[in-house]
Image 1 (cartoon, rainbow, N blue to C red):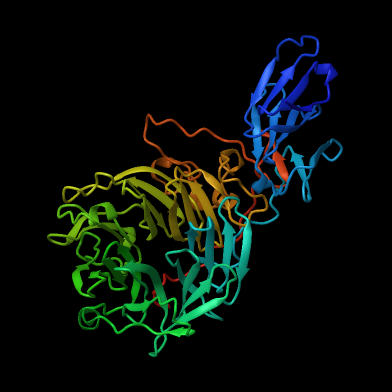
Image 2 (image 1 turned 90 degrees about the vertical axis):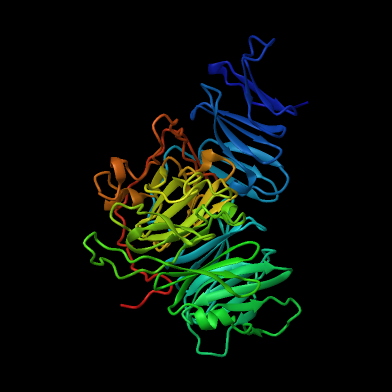
Length: 562
């Protein structure tokens, strides 16, 4: 069935048709027997076609509300805007291209006007996700959304697929800043911890505070929290400046607003941390790891509450026996779960950061000890966040200067001590300040947040997808809508991003990922802005702005005030 017949373009001798078979056919009206070209990309019947001789483009729309732009010379699809990314909702009613305003007008339940611009408009200011430093963010797989929290106790909920802001609420912990967040096992409740020493449980649907979790003692800052399910029991574990492990059982039938923690574990009281606890990590079914300001790491059995082993980070030295950096704090812990669940006695099962920008691989079973130690950054920038793939094949390591480095750890530390660092697969600069959160989403997208007020998405290979809160949304399923190969302009203009800067190894600009010789280079994609702007590949320009001084110093969660 033929749904649409385009206007004949006499000077080019072209006629275009589209219909139920989802194919747009190009005809020469003087040779009607066979089409001269076929445009195949739509996934639903084609219901509108327009040929713009002025722009040398073909516009088409299908029943699933997807809009495509085609090059009239090559018949190639140069841009796709999905209904979600472009804001087109409801059933199609009519469509019209307006040549004077160079816009496509689509009528459904509402009218959407999609403008064609050959050049990207310059940004009037730096794109930020929050007005304040972002201290944590997490991906909610149940709703395909991202939640980010700022130092000013502001919580924002973003659409993962487009980067749009969905909701926000302020004053989550009053005047106290938020320090950490997690979700319950269903993803329907959000848990936040703050400098006020409290944990709060929020309804994910309406932002209502359901419960406040705190103990009767003097309230001290919460640094980290996790949600656990052990033997069909659900609980929230929080750690912080009180130097204790606080366990709150999640009792859905408990309608009291204030919840108190369970009695402390005996091993925690008698042999636990003597300094502020900065981080907590879990490895199902029962392993728990905590780390503190003095560099101590303790592995716990979360079922019995007993201590399994205690690890002491060695004091760094400059080679002459003198200590260079008194800061031995460990603020990042990551289990290598495929190894830990097998209790491998020779292999490293835990990664931790350390002094002078170091990363340590720890063996936990048999004889617990460090079996590898290396420093990712040339100038010893402190590692601030880490993430590993599900199979422990790749490790993503971010630092205080905004760099993300990727290491191949599939075989690293499996058979015992390692004398060298693992193979560095690639690196790029994601932010101009400390990275506070790093998370791999469905093994294909990397989520990062920073003190530079931004929350960003990257492909696992370092391709820049976008910054949450930018004016034009992306379509996560359409790489042509990503910002790649562009990078944020403040990264381009920052001195540490320059190739000559000592931070960069091998003289590779920070805007590119580094791959081993022989690897195919990533093909550059045209930038696109799908909601109200179409961009023509090859014509977009990046307006470089002088960045504002955004280097605000922020103490690590649990750090000491100067």
